[in-house]
Length: 530
Image (cartoon, rainbow, N blue to C red):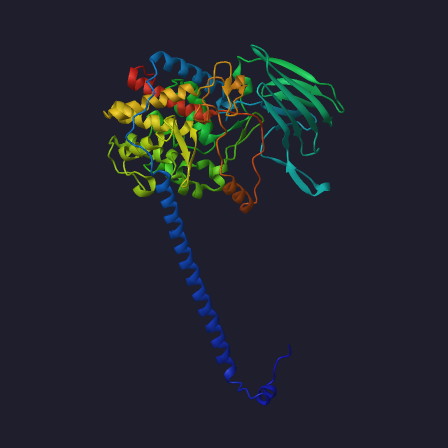
């Protein structure tokens, strides 16, 4: 549009002196409109937040309206012999997942699986199945993960899937079908690998055990038979700091009474910028003096979300899904028995007072003191009488091992240290339930479809979740928040290292083990504390 001259303005009857004032009015109106809209958006956000809070609060009230907090459990206390046997089996499981590293360090593997890794001698590089790394091919203008696991088929006594390994120089350098017969004999299992594509020489390893060496074009299958008694061969290459390595350090420093293991774990944690023992689980091992009262319900409990530990040719660090939506997890999690029980146990261990006020809003946490939280959680137990469920602000789902364990620890302290007789009954019941959910010595466990599965590497662990018939059920995950967070942060799901029925892990078993050792010490005076 052509600029108007003074003559044009005069012909149109517009006084040139009016132009600045008109522009000012336009600017003024624009700013005022923005302010009005900004005020509207802010007020709307506040109103929506209040509405959501009220709805969530109402849903929780409805969710828990019929909980009976006064009903006593029906389970009998486990005997000392039962506790001893359970602790022995669990200790063997977590010990098998302890992974020594070079330089006198160590980590705790996340779970038992099939830890495959490939070595490419021409590139002098290791590629670990499940590691969160990418290789980039300029000719294809894109990057892809270095490994993938597909076509998985988990049967009661076998697993089948396909694996792909890529290097920085060659995509799909090794593609192979894997078959595991978990009960080739009563004491052994077999791994059969059939390569489908091999580019260049490559060695395939099961952690520290070489499975086969292949040359370009190889097609012949390789079968290895291994002893099911050696669970350490099946420890995952994946490790976690918060879920496993910190808790392993706490356990071997106290109940486990193994200073060498504790020192190696501490050395790794310190070398990677973490404070050994500064963990949400510290109160379970009578080691809560160095953590704050509100540790379970703030970001201090998640240092692995700030920085990731170093990986190596032997192991790699897991990127926790919680880090994708940490704030939302904490906000909603305060209505879950998990964070409620941990907050109560933390305050109780640190202050030694069942009626000590807790940090946070008592109406949101559904209890202001350890005693009040304990009573609320007894109502959650009595939903089924068979454990503590996992809960969202809207509903409660499967019965959960990590929630039952921390509830049992809270009741043990309240009952056997502070004289609450009802708490003793619930502590004993929690122990009885956990022992009932322990994977058998041969690795057998029942799935919620009625089938009995067997995984030798899982022997002695505790089911992470179960139904009312004490059958393993897959723990529920918040799919929508995870999907939204992945999209928002332009991230991708963590690759798979093992895609099968995985009934337990280090975190679940350490929680149960720590609680059972705490109860054995309090009830039967059999203590292994250093």
